Amino acid sequence: MDPAIIKTPSARPAQPLAEDVTRALTLAIHEHRIKPGMKLGEDELADIYGVSRTVVRSALHALAHLQLVDIQRNRGAFVAQPTLRDAREVFEARELLEPRIARMAAAKATAEDIALLQQHIHDEHAALAEADHGRALHLSGQFHIEIARIADQQTIAAFVESLISRSSLIIALYWRRESALCEKHAHHELVQAIADGNGDKAADLMRSHLVDLHSALDLREQDEAPRSLKDALL
Amino acid sequence: MDPAIIKTPSARPAQPLAEDVTRALTLAIHEHRIKPGMKLGEDELADIYGVSRTVVRSALHALAHLQLVDIQRNRGAFVAQPTLRDAREVFEARELLEPRIARMAAAKATAEDIALLQQHIHDEHAALAEADHGRALHLSGQFHIEIARIADQQTIAAFVESLISRSSLIIALYWRRESALCEKHAHHELVQAIADGNGDKAADLMRSHLVDLHSALDLREQDEAPRSLKDALL
DNA sequence: TTTTTAAAAATTGTATACAGTTTTGCGCTC
DNA sequence: GAGCGCAAAACTGTATACAATTTTTAAAAA
Image (cartoon, rainbow over all chains, first blue to last red; front, side, top):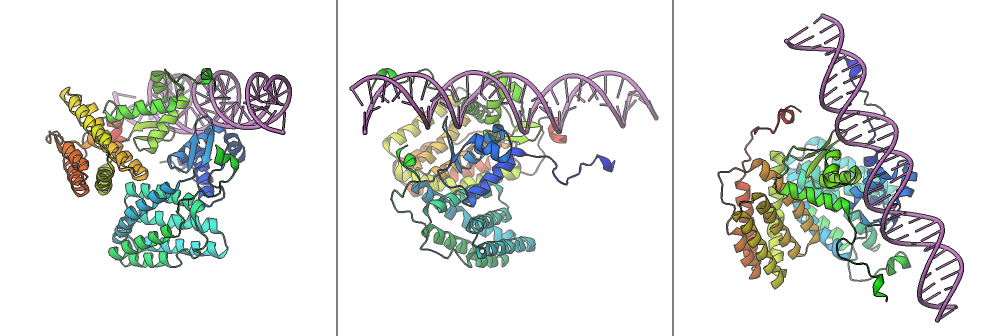
């Protein structure tokens, strides 16, 4: 086989533009750089990323499927604003799925997996040390997704990923500052249980971790200040 | 307010073309009119539905998100072919989620809900009587989705809907004809338990119903006859 | 001043045109 | 006749152009 035929994988094997834009927007939402309710104009995004509206639309539709943005016909795309009900449902679903995923992960994790999880925790602490809360939040979510990947259950992992994405929006809307410390060592203990292959403990730790998160939200019935009059009177 | 201003809602208030095409394709896949592995050419579909490739692409991407079609870059869209592993995962996930959903439905179902479910069963039997197995299969899936709707848990219901869609493909690929009768009265008993508000029984019936379905699949490791040489040698 | 109405501007939905990749088909060489 | 190679055709990815809807703006009437 002629080695010259092999395409150079360096630089860019090809540019999946739509996916790049999807990733960029997803990250921005996860890091709370763009907030719930914000309008995502197609022309505006096309200018920003230097692509046509076609790929922007494709990306926005992809995000709509993940329920990260809300597309209203002839009106445009907005960063989703999960309701209180959505918030409860998302965390209930997480409390149903993730402990089971943690148990499976404990049964399947390799040494490399454990190292990767510890690296994640390290990065997360580093981000917190720099007061980069957006990045810390994103990494915290990625930690959970990584566990789902280790559990080797693609189907449920996809659901978990979707739930964690939405959790980021929920935290943006309903986090109460009073509960300052976000699970300092919860993730660390969880990794330890997984490394030990202790499925029961991993599931329990995951469950209590999620309950902690859930209870750190302010999900009381209330009409919190809308971002603008227009939002309220729409 | 001037009544002349009110738009006539008859005929077509507007045509959400992409959604129409998505629905049509989804139904065709659910009814096994188009089979796993089949190529879905954009120009071809555009001609069939009398729309531009733009809306066809939008529909195909929507189906890809539901994992009903598999889009390969620069090669096109194909009806998805769930692997044996996918099949196992989907039914495991259903066995995790749907009994819980059935229990919730039993707690919330109204008289109208029960009537709707019975109507569903009736339609399903009618389709079977006409030997319209495709339609019967679709309605059978819709029955499960209806229960999720009754349970009033949008988040989990969306997951269940996705799982049931994929189940249709799995049945197309792995159903074994030997197990002829597809749960003659399983659905009927389930409705009865829900109508009685008997959550425990509803959950149990749902679980055993799903186990029956699962065991009616031939999920042994095997390379079943591929639809074409190309599929096998790709 | 407030409300109503209409026209213009801006934005999204759809169709078409162009560019890049993959597949196909034919001719050539061995 | 089998295998290789290149060109053409087919198809997908992206950009642009046009159509339809919504929002804004401003003027006119109450």
